[in-house]
Amino acid sequence: MNEITIDKDIPLPRPRGRGKYKYPFLKMEIGDSFFCVEKQSRVASAAASYAASYKDRKFATRQEGDGVRVWRIA
Image 1: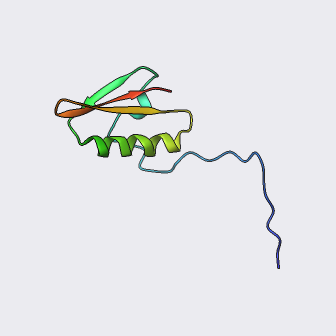
Image 2: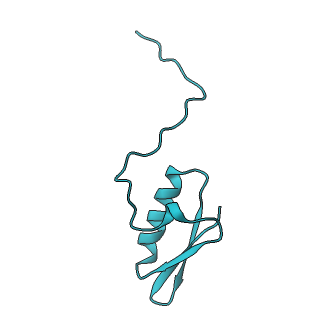
């Protein structure tokens, strides 16, 4: 049986998705926000998915009137 070796310090490649996002997560700087008329759960899920791909970014969402506002917090 072949033994599996563990490698260290191999960088994770960038995601190979479509390259386009419905929301402007990539363009946001810390402190920026945007508003959209969507369900909060949908936008929060998209933000969490994006943040999982880019470990240095974090987002917060809050219901605001008939839509949701998203902030980049890190």
